[in-house]
Length: 357
Ligand SMILES: Nc1ncnc2c1ncn2[C@@H]1O[C@H](COP(=O)(O)OP(=O)(O)OP(=O)(O)O)[C@@H](O)[C@H]1O
Ligand SMILES: [Mg+2]
Image (cartoon, rainbow, N blue to C red):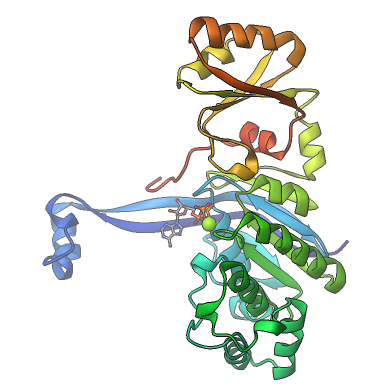
Protein backbone atom coordinates (compact mmCIF):
# COMPACT_ATOMS: atom_id res chain seq x y z
CA UNK A 1 0.00 0.00 0.00
CA UNK A 2 1.60 3.29 -1.07
CA UNK A 3 1.52 6.20 1.36
CA UNK A 4 -0.67 9.19 0.69
CA UNK A 5 0.56 10.97 3.79
CA UNK A 6 3.97 10.70 5.43
CA UNK A 7 4.55 12.68 8.58
CA UNK A 8 7.93 12.55 10.29
CA UNK A 9 8.80 14.26 13.58
CA UNK A 10 6.25 17.01 12.96
CA UNK A 11 6.32 19.94 15.35
CA UNK A 12 4.05 22.97 15.39
CA UNK A 13 4.69 25.78 17.82
CA UNK A 14 2.42 28.81 17.98
CA UNK A 15 3.60 31.99 19.54
CA UNK A 16 1.09 34.39 20.95
CA UNK A 17 1.40 37.65 22.75
CA UNK A 18 -0.14 37.84 26.18
CA UNK A 19 -0.78 41.23 27.70
CA UNK A 20 -0.66 41.41 31.46
CA UNK A 21 -1.88 43.94 34.00
CA UNK A 22 -3.27 47.25 32.82
CA UNK A 23 -2.22 46.51 29.24
CA UNK A 24 -4.46 43.49 29.00
CA UNK A 25 -7.33 45.90 28.35
CA UNK A 26 -8.17 46.15 24.68
CA UNK A 27 -9.10 49.81 24.35
CA UNK A 28 -7.95 52.54 24.42
CA UNK A 29 -4.41 51.18 24.64
CA UNK A 30 -4.48 48.80 21.71
CA UNK A 31 -2.25 50.87 19.47
CA UNK A 32 0.36 51.34 22.11
CA UNK A 33 0.19 48.22 24.15
CA UNK A 34 2.82 46.36 22.15
CA UNK A 35 5.23 49.22 22.52
CA UNK A 36 4.47 50.00 26.16
CA UNK A 37 4.18 46.31 26.98
CA UNK A 38 7.70 45.71 25.72
CA UNK A 39 8.99 48.70 27.68
CA UNK A 40 7.32 47.65 30.93
CA UNK A 41 7.75 43.93 30.44
CA UNK A 42 4.01 43.33 30.68
CA UNK A 43 3.81 41.79 27.17
CA UNK A 44 4.97 38.23 27.17
CA UNK A 45 5.26 35.92 24.19
CA UNK A 46 3.92 32.51 25.10
CA UNK A 47 4.71 29.37 23.16
CA UNK A 48 2.01 26.81 22.56
CA UNK A 49 3.38 23.47 21.44
CA UNK A 50 0.39 22.23 19.44
CA UNK A 51 2.23 19.26 17.88
CA UNK A 52 5.31 17.66 19.32
CA UNK A 53 7.36 15.11 17.32
CA UNK A 54 4.42 13.45 15.56
CA UNK A 55 5.20 10.68 13.03
CA UNK A 56 2.83 8.41 11.08
CA UNK A 57 1.93 7.26 7.58
CA UNK A 58 -1.45 6.87 5.93
CA UNK A 59 -1.86 4.37 3.10
CA UNK A 60 -3.92 4.85 -0.04
CA UNK A 61 -7.58 3.99 0.52
CA UNK A 62 -7.43 4.04 4.31
CA UNK A 63 -9.87 5.70 6.69
CA UNK A 64 -7.50 7.01 9.31
CA UNK A 65 -8.86 8.44 12.56
CA UNK A 66 -7.20 11.22 14.53
CA UNK A 67 -8.44 11.19 18.10
CA UNK A 68 -7.57 13.27 21.11
CA UNK A 69 -9.00 15.40 23.89
CA UNK A 70 -9.80 19.08 23.25
CA UNK A 71 -6.65 21.03 22.47
CA UNK A 72 -4.58 17.93 21.69
CA UNK A 73 -3.67 19.20 18.20
CA UNK A 74 -6.13 17.42 15.86
CA UNK A 75 -7.24 20.53 13.93
CA UNK A 76 -3.69 21.86 13.74
CA UNK A 77 -2.57 18.55 12.22
CA UNK A 78 -5.36 18.59 9.65
CA UNK A 79 -4.67 22.20 8.71
CA UNK A 80 -1.04 21.28 8.06
CA UNK A 81 -2.09 18.29 5.94
CA UNK A 82 -4.42 20.61 4.01
CA UNK A 83 -1.54 22.97 3.22
CA UNK A 84 -3.08 25.76 5.30
CA UNK A 85 -0.37 25.89 7.97
CA UNK A 86 3.38 25.47 7.57
CA UNK A 87 4.92 23.26 10.24
CA UNK A 88 7.62 24.64 12.50
CA UNK A 89 9.66 21.44 12.31
CA UNK A 90 9.81 17.96 10.81
CA UNK A 91 8.65 16.84 7.39
CA UNK A 92 5.16 16.35 5.99
CA UNK A 93 4.51 14.84 2.57
CA UNK A 94 0.97 14.84 1.22
CA UNK A 95 0.30 13.08 -2.11
CA UNK A 96 4.06 13.23 -2.62
CA UNK A 97 4.29 17.02 -2.12
CA UNK A 98 6.35 18.58 0.65
CA UNK A 99 3.90 20.76 2.62
CA UNK A 100 6.65 23.13 3.76
CA UNK A 101 7.65 23.92 0.16
CA UNK A 102 4.53 23.33 -1.88
CA UNK A 103 1.68 24.18 0.44
CA UNK A 104 -0.29 25.92 -2.34
CA UNK A 105 -0.28 22.76 -4.48
CA UNK A 106 -1.36 20.68 -1.49
CA UNK A 107 -4.15 23.16 -0.68
CA UNK A 108 -5.43 22.86 -4.26
CA UNK A 109 -5.37 19.08 -4.29
CA UNK A 110 -6.73 18.28 -0.84
CA UNK A 111 -10.15 19.04 0.65
CA UNK A 112 -10.71 19.88 4.28
CA UNK A 113 -14.25 19.35 5.50
CA UNK A 114 -15.16 20.95 8.81
CA UNK A 115 -18.27 20.90 10.96
CA UNK A 116 -21.21 23.24 10.38
CA UNK A 117 -19.77 25.36 13.16
CA UNK A 118 -16.56 25.94 11.19
CA UNK A 119 -18.07 26.28 7.70
CA UNK A 120 -17.98 30.02 7.12
CA UNK A 121 -18.08 29.74 3.32
CA UNK A 122 -21.81 28.98 3.06
CA UNK A 123 -24.11 31.74 1.81
CA UNK A 124 -27.35 31.01 3.65
CA UNK A 125 -29.54 33.14 1.39
CA UNK A 126 -28.52 31.22 -1.75
CA UNK A 127 -29.70 27.83 -2.91
CA UNK A 128 -27.76 24.61 -2.40
CA UNK A 129 -26.90 24.47 -6.10
CA UNK A 130 -25.82 28.12 -6.29
CA UNK A 131 -23.52 27.69 -3.30
CA UNK A 132 -21.87 24.72 -4.97
CA UNK A 133 -21.65 26.49 -8.34
CA UNK A 134 -19.89 29.46 -6.77
CA UNK A 135 -17.39 27.18 -5.08
CA UNK A 136 -16.90 25.21 -8.31
CA UNK A 137 -15.99 28.50 -10.02
CA UNK A 138 -13.60 29.35 -7.22
CA UNK A 139 -11.89 25.97 -7.43
CA UNK A 140 -11.92 26.01 -11.23
CA UNK A 141 -13.88 22.76 -11.56
CA UNK A 142 -16.59 22.10 -14.15
CA UNK A 143 -20.30 22.65 -13.50
CA UNK A 144 -20.98 19.01 -14.29
CA UNK A 145 -19.07 18.15 -11.12
CA UNK A 146 -21.78 20.05 -9.19
CA UNK A 147 -24.37 17.61 -10.55
CA UNK A 148 -22.21 14.65 -9.62
CA UNK A 149 -21.74 15.73 -6.01
CA UNK A 150 -25.42 16.69 -5.68
CA UNK A 151 -26.34 13.14 -6.68
CA UNK A 152 -23.68 11.46 -4.60
CA UNK A 153 -24.68 13.28 -1.43
CA UNK A 154 -28.43 12.91 -2.03
CA UNK A 155 -29.01 16.66 -2.29
CA UNK A 156 -30.85 16.62 -5.63
CA UNK A 157 -34.26 17.08 -4.01
CA UNK A 158 -33.21 20.24 -2.20
CA UNK A 159 -30.88 21.71 -4.80
CA UNK A 160 -33.10 24.78 -5.31
CA UNK A 161 -33.83 25.35 -1.63
CA UNK A 162 -32.11 28.20 0.13
CA UNK A 163 -29.59 26.89 2.63
CA UNK A 164 -31.16 28.92 5.43
CA UNK A 165 -34.28 26.74 5.21
CA UNK A 166 -32.46 23.43 5.49
CA UNK A 167 -32.15 21.18 8.53
CA UNK A 168 -28.77 20.93 10.22
CA UNK A 169 -28.21 17.44 8.84
CA UNK A 170 -28.81 18.62 5.28
CA UNK A 171 -26.41 21.55 5.73
CA UNK A 172 -23.82 19.04 6.97
CA UNK A 173 -24.41 17.12 3.74
CA UNK A 174 -23.88 20.32 1.74
CA UNK A 175 -20.57 20.86 3.52
CA UNK A 176 -19.51 17.39 2.46
CA UNK A 177 -20.71 18.08 -1.09
CA UNK A 178 -18.56 21.23 -1.15
CA UNK A 179 -15.61 19.16 0.03
CA UNK A 180 -16.15 16.69 -2.80
CA UNK A 181 -16.13 19.30 -5.57
CA UNK A 182 -12.38 19.12 -6.03
CA UNK A 183 -12.54 15.34 -6.48
CA UNK A 184 -9.56 15.01 -4.15
CA UNK A 185 -7.77 11.75 -3.61
CA UNK A 186 -7.42 12.76 0.02
CA UNK A 187 -10.26 14.10 2.15
CA UNK A 188 -9.60 15.58 5.55
CA UNK A 189 -12.56 15.75 7.89
CA UNK A 190 -12.36 17.75 11.10
CA UNK A 191 -15.17 16.69 13.43
CA UNK A 192 -17.68 16.95 10.57
CA UNK A 193 -20.51 15.64 12.73
CA UNK A 194 -20.24 18.22 15.46
CA UNK A 195 -23.66 19.71 16.09
CA UNK A 196 -25.76 17.25 14.06
CA UNK A 197 -28.26 14.72 15.34
CA UNK A 198 -27.26 11.17 16.25
CA UNK A 199 -29.61 9.92 13.52
CA UNK A 200 -27.90 11.95 10.82
CA UNK A 201 -24.49 10.97 12.17
CA UNK A 202 -25.32 7.32 11.41
CA UNK A 203 -26.32 8.23 7.82
CA UNK A 204 -23.21 10.32 7.49
CA UNK A 205 -20.98 7.42 8.44
CA UNK A 206 -22.60 5.50 5.57
CA UNK A 207 -21.74 8.35 3.22
CA UNK A 208 -18.11 8.39 4.37
CA UNK A 209 -17.86 4.62 3.84
CA UNK A 210 -19.31 4.92 0.33
CA UNK A 211 -16.83 7.66 -0.51
CA UNK A 212 -14.04 5.41 0.64
CA UNK A 213 -15.23 2.18 -0.98
CA UNK A 214 -16.80 3.40 -4.20
CA UNK A 215 -14.41 6.21 -5.04
CA UNK A 216 -11.34 4.87 -3.24
CA UNK A 217 -10.85 8.19 -1.44
CA UNK A 218 -8.35 8.21 1.42
CA UNK A 219 -9.93 9.83 4.46
CA UNK A 220 -8.34 11.33 7.54
CA UNK A 221 -11.05 11.82 10.11
CA UNK A 222 -10.53 13.84 13.28
CA UNK A 223 -13.11 13.21 15.95
CA UNK A 224 -13.80 13.15 19.66
CA UNK A 225 -16.47 10.52 19.20
CA UNK A 226 -14.96 7.14 19.95
CA UNK A 227 -17.99 5.20 18.73
CA UNK A 228 -17.73 6.95 15.38
CA UNK A 229 -14.00 6.22 15.20
CA UNK A 230 -14.38 2.56 16.14
CA UNK A 231 -17.06 2.01 13.50
CA UNK A 232 -15.44 3.95 10.72
CA UNK A 233 -11.68 3.86 10.91
CA UNK A 234 -9.23 1.23 9.66
CA UNK A 235 -6.58 2.72 11.94
CA UNK A 236 -6.52 5.49 14.51
CA UNK A 237 -3.85 7.71 16.01
CA UNK A 238 -4.45 9.14 19.46
CA UNK A 239 -2.98 12.54 20.24
CA UNK A 240 -2.47 13.83 23.74
CA UNK A 241 -1.04 17.28 24.39
CA UNK A 242 0.40 17.38 20.89
CA UNK A 243 2.13 14.00 21.11
CA UNK A 244 1.06 10.91 19.23
CA UNK A 245 0.64 8.44 22.08
CA UNK A 246 -0.55 5.38 20.18
CA UNK A 247 -1.48 4.36 16.63
CA UNK A 248 -3.02 1.18 15.26
CA UNK A 249 -6.14 -0.71 14.27
CA UNK A 250 -8.96 -0.19 16.81
CA UNK A 251 -9.24 -3.93 17.46
CA UNK A 252 -5.48 -4.25 18.09
CA UNK A 253 -5.50 -1.27 20.43
CA UNK A 254 -8.40 -2.77 22.37
CA UNK A 255 -6.53 -6.09 22.55
CA UNK A 256 -3.48 -4.26 23.88
CA UNK A 257 -5.49 -3.53 27.05
CA UNK A 258 -5.29 -7.23 27.90
CA UNK A 259 -8.12 -9.40 29.13
CA UNK A 260 -9.70 -6.66 31.20
CA UNK A 261 -13.39 -5.92 31.63
CA UNK A 262 -15.28 -2.70 32.15
CA UNK A 263 -17.81 -2.17 34.92
CA UNK A 264 -20.03 0.83 34.56
CA UNK A 265 -21.83 1.93 37.69
CA UNK A 266 -24.43 4.67 37.71
CA UNK A 267 -24.35 6.38 41.07
CA UNK A 268 -26.97 8.98 41.97
CA UNK A 269 -24.91 10.74 44.63
CA UNK A 270 -21.37 10.12 43.37
CA UNK A 271 -18.43 12.08 44.73
CA UNK A 272 -15.09 12.89 43.16
CA UNK A 273 -13.06 11.18 45.95
CA UNK A 274 -14.70 7.80 45.20
CA UNK A 275 -12.32 7.49 42.24
CA UNK A 276 -9.15 7.49 44.36
CA UNK A 277 -10.59 4.94 46.79
CA UNK A 278 -11.64 2.61 43.98
CA UNK A 279 -8.23 2.87 42.33
CA UNK A 280 -6.67 1.45 45.49
CA UNK A 281 -8.67 -1.78 45.21
CA UNK A 282 -6.91 -4.97 44.13
CA UNK A 283 -7.76 -5.93 40.56
CA UNK A 284 -8.83 -2.42 39.53
CA UNK A 285 -6.85 -1.10 36.55
CA UNK A 286 -8.39 2.28 35.90
CA UNK A 287 -11.29 4.41 37.12
CA UNK A 288 -12.90 7.28 35.27
CA UNK A 289 -15.70 9.50 36.37
CA UNK A 290 -17.78 12.15 34.63
CA UNK A 291 -15.28 12.24 31.83
CA UNK A 292 -17.83 13.06 29.17
CA UNK A 293 -21.49 13.78 28.90
CA UNK A 294 -21.88 12.33 25.43
CA UNK A 295 -24.71 9.85 25.31
CA UNK A 296 -23.08 8.16 22.33
CA UNK A 297 -20.35 7.03 24.71
CA UNK A 298 -22.76 6.06 27.46
CA UNK A 299 -20.99 8.32 29.91
CA UNK A 300 -23.21 10.53 32.03
CA UNK A 301 -22.55 12.61 35.07
CA UNK A 302 -22.45 10.22 37.97
CA UNK A 303 -21.26 7.28 35.88
CA UNK A 304 -18.17 5.49 37.02
CA UNK A 305 -16.27 3.56 34.38
CA UNK A 306 -14.07 1.04 36.15
CA UNK A 307 -11.69 -1.20 34.22
CA UNK A 308 -10.83 -4.36 36.12
CA UNK A 309 -9.04 -7.67 35.48
CA UNK A 310 -11.92 -9.85 36.61
CA UNK A 311 -15.35 -8.30 37.11
CA UNK A 312 -16.83 -11.24 39.00
CA UNK A 313 -14.06 -11.07 41.58
CA UNK A 314 -13.79 -7.31 41.99
CA UNK A 315 -17.44 -6.25 41.82
CA UNK A 316 -18.32 -7.18 45.44
CA UNK A 317 -15.36 -5.12 46.68
CA UNK A 318 -16.38 -2.17 44.51
CA UNK A 319 -19.94 -2.28 45.80
CA UNK A 320 -18.75 -2.49 49.37
CA UNK A 321 -16.68 0.67 48.95
CA UNK A 322 -19.49 2.48 47.18
CA UNK A 323 -22.29 1.53 49.53
CA UNK A 324 -20.58 1.08 52.90
CA UNK A 325 -17.94 3.79 52.71
CA UNK A 326 -19.62 6.37 50.55
CA UNK A 327 -23.25 5.59 51.17
CA UNK A 328 -23.67 5.71 47.41
CA UNK A 329 -27.04 5.18 45.77
CA UNK A 330 -26.21 2.68 43.02
CA UNK A 331 -28.75 2.87 40.19
CA UNK A 332 -27.38 0.41 37.70
CA UNK A 333 -24.40 -1.83 37.03
CA UNK A 334 -23.24 -3.08 33.65
CA UNK A 335 -20.27 -5.22 32.72
CA UNK A 336 -18.87 -5.25 29.20
CA UNK A 337 -15.69 -5.68 27.18
CA UNK A 338 -13.40 -2.67 26.72
CA UNK A 339 -13.86 -0.56 23.61
CA UNK A 340 -11.99 2.27 21.96
CA UNK A 341 -13.13 4.65 24.70
CA UNK A 342 -11.15 2.60 27.21
CA UNK A 343 -8.09 2.77 24.96
CA UNK A 344 -8.57 6.54 24.79
CA UNK A 345 -8.92 6.84 28.57
CA UNK A 346 -5.87 4.64 29.08
CA UNK A 347 -3.55 6.62 26.80
CA UNK A 348 -4.67 10.20 27.32
CA UNK A 349 -4.53 12.51 30.28
CA UNK A 350 -7.97 13.78 29.25
CA UNK A 351 -7.05 17.26 30.31
CA UNK A 352 -8.68 19.92 28.19
CA UNK A 353 -6.78 22.78 26.56
CA UNK A 354 -3.16 23.73 27.01
CA UNK A 355 -3.23 27.42 26.41
CA UNK A 356 0.10 28.99 27.15
CA UNK A 357 2.16 25.86 27.41
N1 LIG B 1 -3.50 30.01 15.70
C1 LIG B 1 -3.18 29.61 16.92
N2 LIG B 1 -2.47 30.42 17.77
C2 LIG B 1 -2.11 30.03 19.00
N3 LIG B 1 -2.43 28.83 19.52
C3 LIG B 1 -3.14 27.98 18.74
C4 LIG B 1 -3.57 28.32 17.42
N4 LIG B 1 -4.27 27.28 16.89
C5 LIG B 1 -4.29 26.33 17.85
N5 LIG B 1 -3.62 26.75 18.95
C6 LIG B 1 -3.41 25.97 20.19
O1 LIG B 1 -2.87 24.72 19.82
C7 LIG B 1 -3.40 23.70 20.64
C8 LIG B 1 -4.04 22.63 19.78
O2 LIG B 1 -5.22 23.18 19.21
P1 LIG B 1 -6.13 22.37 18.18
O3 LIG B 1 -7.22 23.29 17.75
O4 LIG B 1 -5.27 21.79 17.12
O5 LIG B 1 -6.71 21.19 19.10
P2 LIG B 1 -7.90 20.18 18.80
O6 LIG B 1 -7.38 18.83 19.18
O7 LIG B 1 -8.40 20.36 17.43
O8 LIG B 1 -8.99 20.63 19.87
P3 LIG B 1 -10.61 20.52 19.77
O9 LIG B 1 -10.96 19.10 20.10
O10 LIG B 1 -11.06 21.47 20.83
O11 LIG B 1 -11.02 20.94 18.39
C9 LIG B 1 -4.35 24.39 21.61
O12 LIG B 1 -3.68 24.64 22.81
C10 LIG B 1 -4.71 25.67 20.90
O13 LIG B 1 -5.01 26.69 21.82
MG1 LIG C 1 -10.28 20.84 16.63
